[in-house]
Figure (cartoon, rainbow over the protein chains, first blue to last red):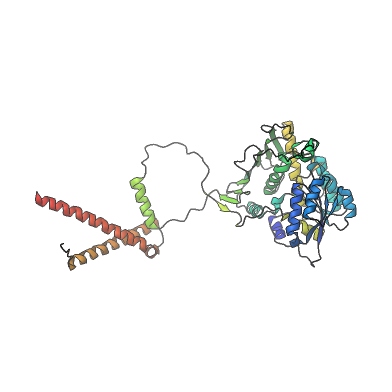
Length: 415
Length: 78
């Protein structure tokens, strides 16, 4: 069972004891676009803490490959991941940051060759590809980390501890939103309009589910994690309401995921207003977590320390002399939000878990086995992301088809 | 210019008045501690504030005495 404590131990370094300085982990990066480049950068800058090194880079798009190769010139470069898997025999693992619709092929081929895989979220564009990746994971016994970095973010880990320790009481609702204000487009090289779909794959249905697979997947994972369960049903709606520029994915979505115990996870996302940014709120009858902003609130806040008696006496006198005299009152007090500022979940909120994921990946590679329960978090988050898209497309409540249930592979690690 | 002479008795009376004010301020503090069930240590920790209250009380007595003095003087003239 995946517990916050076990992941805290991982990011504290447990299980990453290098036997010698030569005990290195060699990685290949497949897909060197913005995310792949960033992860390669993190490993280049900080990977030495874990003995990690990028020795191979692969991309079909030469400008991206050259950009990342300029940063890591010692790495070998490839245009075909199969050739990389054949030739780069030193590799212990691969990082897959290709567009969503081409996650499954490299992942399954890498697992089949005995490599450990870190694959960016969401897992795949289709339910069948997602399931095929899961099947390969269980068949090979290698680790398959999905890039839901909140699993390694200290404030989320401590927050989940609060949920599991009953500090929030009974959690019956989770709310999350992710709002941006931009068109989400990447620049297409001048004079090459044929690259539009290739560069802006996030905006087209063949390759992506847009806001759902790129953003919502993270918060669905958090909701499942908080509930230690997966939803039973999702309803949703969505539209292209602002950026009517030829894109095929919604720029405005709203979903409700229902859990077996009656809990509702309410999610919305849009890219035409960023006033509220992003947040995930876990609401219990005793307290509330606002995980993205590192806050915890009690329903009954501890009373503030009482001022000295003499101060209270003067305050009372002031109130009696200068206070307003009520001549009538409303029968109802507006239930406006509490002004109580709550407390921080962690004192130092200086990471989002992106690099800390590699502590887990390094541990899995060194021990040559997955971290129990971790893959299932990524699988069900990815699966329910795609089911959310189905709910939007059909306008109906959608349940998970039985055949995608992976508890048959490993019932003990069932989320 | 005429010198103003403050006699010893007057100084003694004013110091006594200040002492009464200080005692009164402390009594108010004790009352507040009992009423609001706060810590008895406030008798010591809030002494600076009590001194301020005592001075405030003393200023009030001066104002009251000036008013009474003015009133009496006015009565005598009439």
